[in-house]
Structures are given as structure tokens and as C-alpha cells.
Image 1: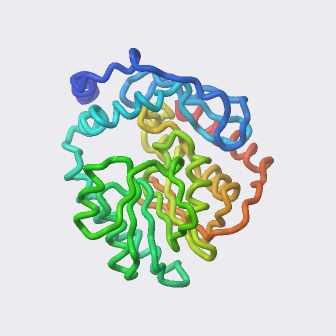
Image 2: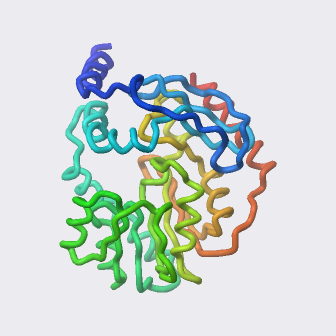
Image 3: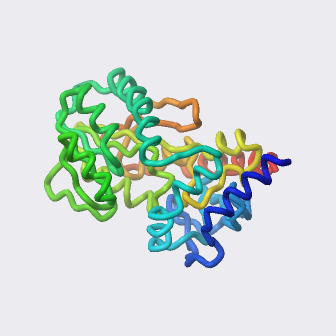
Length: 300
């Protein structure tokens, strides 16, 4: 098909050399610690030979091998936006993303207004970029807004909009005694290198009686839409969650889901209440993993 050939040519023109990039193996599942995995795809949607594995104990999907942290840093600096633009055949950059984020922020605020029992006095947006989502929550609830992000240029935009900014990564950030009433992790969890550590960090940042919001691009929904596991895989997503694996992560970190939504683009979003950590039903997760695996294999 001409469309496929044109897309492949656009991707090749980006110039990212995946096979020469430094990669590392992921020795065990980040959710349950199991080393029992099966390969569900040997290429990603861009055509790179990225191996997507599924944990047979809990159903978490992840790339292994994957780019190292340093390689991911270089990838996001120079290739990420051009690659996504080439795949979709339209310009996707910091400017266009901000337009999309405004619509996203309106939907999120509506969900929070329906769900939260009290107005949050403070909000922290983890990976909050230029602060568009944090600003929308601030304006809706009258909250003090803080943005935590590793990109200094994007934090400058958030600071200019009157928000407190913190440069860094969630898993490395030490909040000391400070806590926030509402902690957000929006359209970011799939990009993390350590999901468990980030959620543990978020729980430490969440005030007693506070809440969090996290959403994930569901592996099964993405695969159904693309028609294959390969179509759902992409090197910029080290991890692939489902509603079941996301819930298991939350319980282990000390969050209880109190509301959820499924967006039109396949993201499950969860409003979470701070709670005591507890173990999920591992046998139920094992059964869910087998169902997920069977469906992915059936898609081709």
C-alpha cells in the first residue's frame, strides 16, 4: 500500500538508528517480580525491532531489551516529536500538544469536580510539562499549583503562568515533609522506566485524605484499534498496562481507585484515594494475563 510506504519513508527520514542505540535487558516484571514472560511482538509500530513481552503471572507488558535511560534522554531531546509526527503525517510539537492538552484538561477537571469530596488546596502535576493541566485544576478549584518536570524550558512556561516549579523526576524527588492534596500523573505512566518507584513516590507526596489521578493507554484497546500487538508497541512506551495491571499497581503503592473513566483514545483514567498498601489478587491477575495473551495472539 502506498500509505504504508509513505509512512515508512517519513519514519526513515527522521534518522533515528534504533539498532545502534544502547539498550538494556529488563530482568523481571516491574509489577510482580516474575521472570516468566512470553514475546507477543518483535517489532513496534515504527518498524523498529523492539521486543514486547508479557508477564504470564500478572499480564504487565514491557519492552525488553529497551533503550537505556541515557538513550531515552537523547531520544526525547531530538527524535521523539519528529518520529510521532512522521508516523501520523502531521506536525506534533510543543505548540500543538498544548492545544490538545487544553481539551484534555477540561475533561479531567469535569471528572475531578464530579468525584473529589473536597476542593484540593494544593495540586502537584508530575511530568506536568508547561503546566496547562495544573493551571486548569488550579483555576477550577482555587488550588496552589506545582509542576514537577525534568525539562527546564517547559518549566519556564509554567513559572510564567504563576505556578511553582520543581525540576526533576518523580522517582528521584524527595518531598521531605511536604504533601499535596491532589497529585496528577497524566498520560505519562507508559513512558516511565520504573512505574512502581514512581507510584511509591507519588504516594509519599499525597496528603493523608488526599487523592491522585493516573491514566494509562490500555494495551488491549490499543492493540484492538491497531489490529495487532505490533501496532500497539512503540519504543517510547517501555511499559504497557491494562485496567487490571494498573489497579494492581495502585493497590501495592497505597492507592484505592474511587472512580474511573475510559477516554475516546483508549486511556483508562483513575481517581485514587490515599490508603494503606495491600496486595492484589494474584491468581485473578494470572487468569487475566492468560486472557490478554490469548487475545493479543488472536489479533496476529
